[in-house]
Image (cartoon, rainbow, N blue to C red; front, side, top):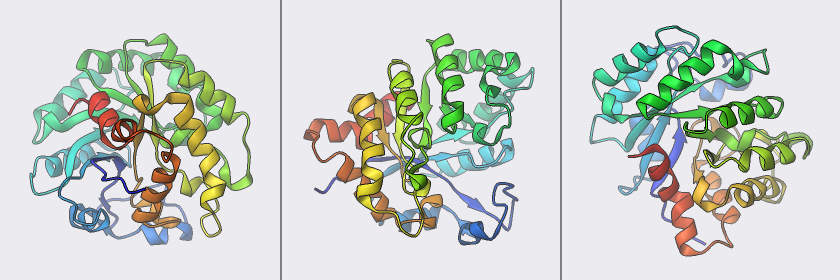
Length: 284
């Protein structure tokens, strides 16, 4: 089955010669060091003119977000929207969001994300200062991307229930431990958060949760399909997680996994996963 991708809802851009990324904390990250910019992205997606992409923050730095927005303002790149970063623990988070929107390309800001997966507190999302800032996101009409691991899914579900007017997107299908074959408690947590109408899921980051060298399509498909079946195509969107995905697979391999996941969907449903859902949720 061949699908013409219209929106890649999750990728990154960086140049490690220009900025440090603290999570690249060992030799395992060497393939990710260097420049992964708009030109490299265009090459990865195969030069498809019809592809629009969403660039997602990769470091807790508003300067990075401003740079991504400036890239999105250039009509010569495939980047159509940006999920940026502001400090959600700051009392003036609303002002920081407004500052990003006032800068070059600010109209392309569609969401905010924090690297919650790296927070030692499994209930970081429930901090009073964070929940106050989530209310500011709601007022601004911005999505909040949830980057959490399985132990943090309970807190993610609770914060989504407590903020029913806020739109949330669960990145990387909640990061199941595919590499060790662990199904629960992730699968049940996905059912619980998937029951919330204000949460959408990204069909992304699957191959890098498996064994990078020995993963197989049959190994990752049950996890991807469980997320798709739980959320449905109207609340599922494709994302490549490029260039992180290249630790385990090429862009085309990741796309192929997504296509296999969606093999039993109708044409209209595939259009939702590969474009319509992202456009509806992020509003671009």
